[in-house]
Structure formats: C-alpha cells, structure tokens
Length: 89
Image (tube, rainbow, N blue to C red; front, side):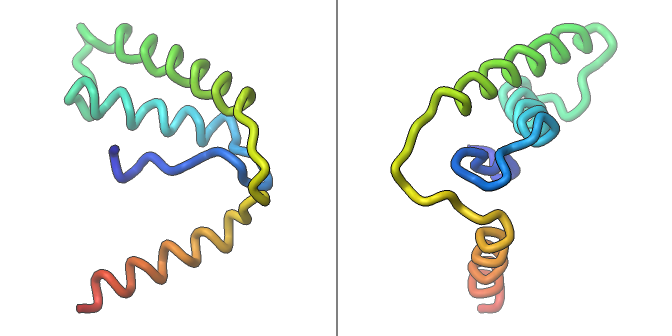
C-alpha cells in the first residue's frame, strides 16, 4: 500500500471529505504512475479520483466494528514514536 494513504476508519472525529479525497488522489497517482497527469489525461485522472472518493466514502459508511474508537492525536503520537525508533538506529 502507498505509505501516504492513512487508515480512515474508526476514528473520532470521522474522516473528512478532504481526507478521503486525498487518499483517493494518492491511490490514483500510485495506480496511474502519474504524480500530475498531462492535459490529455487530466479528465480521466480527475474522474477516477472522484469515483474512488465516492467508493471510499460508501465503504467507510458501511463498515462496522466493536473495537473502541481511535483517537487521531494518540494514533499520530504512536506513529511518530515508531518512526523515531525506526530512524534513530
């Protein structure tokens, strides 16, 4: 998975439309191989981002869990601690 795509499910507050769209953009960039599409491909790129964002929103709305809701700040702190351990060697 692309390292820039972050988990969006089971957080309080829920993922925003902007976060979902950013994940969709990263996914389309990864699949297409384009960081920025050419003018000839811009329409297809944008349409793919829109479709994936809609599909991701539907997925997030339909998922269920019994796990406790995660706190964004706590999860970010854990990720920073993992990165510090990983890169301090």
